[in-house]
Image 1 (tube, rainbow, N blue to C red):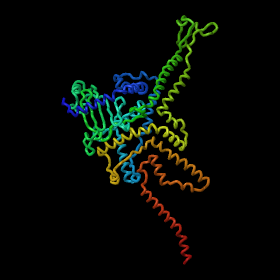
Image 2: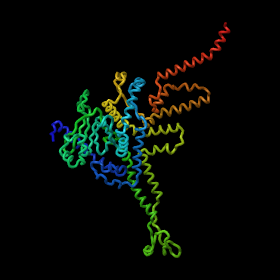
Image 3: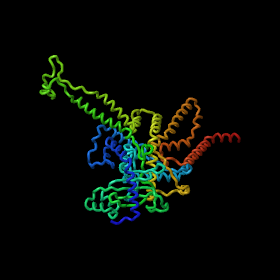
Image 4: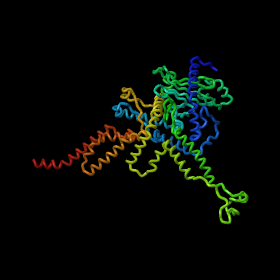
Length: 542
């Protein structure tokens, strides 16, 4: 094996020292908590943590008697996907901080082209975003922390996504509370490592396995951290702001050193408590309810069994010896001469009381996973448009504090990373000169159903005000109250709230031309109508 340089050995030593720090301490406490959640709500993840491992293919359902929490967790992932990242619509836009530039037609079309390209690449079959994004949201609901790795596709151009399980990632925050360092501890087969880095870059143990057992798993550490010094003018990976190191755990060998212009790992937390880097989840809040519900379900199964196939009570065992439970059987001696039953079923508890208690626990679980909120429209389908807007506004108020964090910690860094990759691959259009002169800065404006529920207050207010104004106009017969509405401002902003694409709307120049043509046509019509009267006047003067 080629000997590592002093610099490479120093890198390996620093990363391994950091690994020992992040994998120790309180990590085992988190993992014991995650394991309990996995066993009861997402069994496929059970035994996938450092302190608790299982054999692949082993049964993992032994703790699940009631599936309420598992179903609610799946729905939670679907709810977040539909609210934040629906695949059937554009859920964010790109603009500048300069409102004057945002009104420039050339700038508008440029950013709309970028948005179209970005969504095309993100949802292409090779990117795998939809599946990984759903896995990310489920992990967030179960464990409170999710992580998405975004990179360029290894073959050709485009994007590629990988949801990283909480058991494999170890994030660190900077002084501002932003995750700027991530260590990922995962396994790869020997043949996969050779495909990724080449045989010559592997440690001796992996090379041996490559010949004898190419499917044998080995642990790899990927460390991404900010560089203290880097060259902003250089395009070399080793000069980029974020350093990237792939190290073979067995053999302690640096297999690859490179870098990124932007952080490839987007780590988000559902809720974060003081002094903690990792997040807390809805599943953690309802873990007691889930445990209670499982125990209740076991009891109810026993009681149900006793009800359907009851335990029999007899005054002596002589009767039981000849007793038959077959349909149509006649059992002598089962009653006394007076007609009193000598064999009776053992009384059981009330199943209805147990069901009510279980329903209470199910309600708590569904509330925590946001399922109950989305039953509003299902339970009351006969609503007016105004009522729907009101309910939507209420949802936005309830969801904004928790889901807004996913926009800042997950979606924002991911979009920044995507644009960086597409720019490097030359897939973005040329920037207009007016935007270049302004520095080319941009901001992401979220346009998901979640964002629109937050902005629904404006549309709801307009609907209520307009309804009352029209009532006043109808009562008084005076249209003057409508003069307060500036429709040239309302219509563009209302279309913006309702996510109407810019290309569907006419430009200010086109609107001006239409209005000018309408005014000229009205003037000609007026001239035509007034021509006979003018002729008569001229004739009278003559």
